Figure 1 (cartoon, helix red, strand yellow):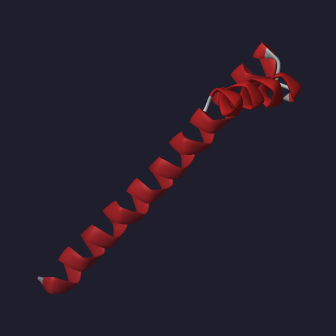
Figure 2: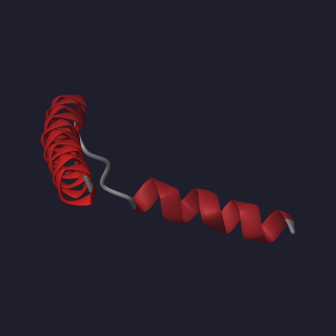
Figure 3: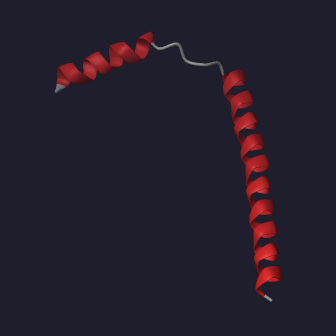
Length: 57
């Protein structure tokens, strides 16, 4: 078991980790895209709900 964790540590040292600025930029992009998609889905849901209410009256 100890060999496994030492090998994991060696492999993690080989990883090229992204820089702090890149992570912050990607985080902003993910938040922006999530907001746009949620607004779109909410709008479609609202429109379909109102349309269904109109036809069922």
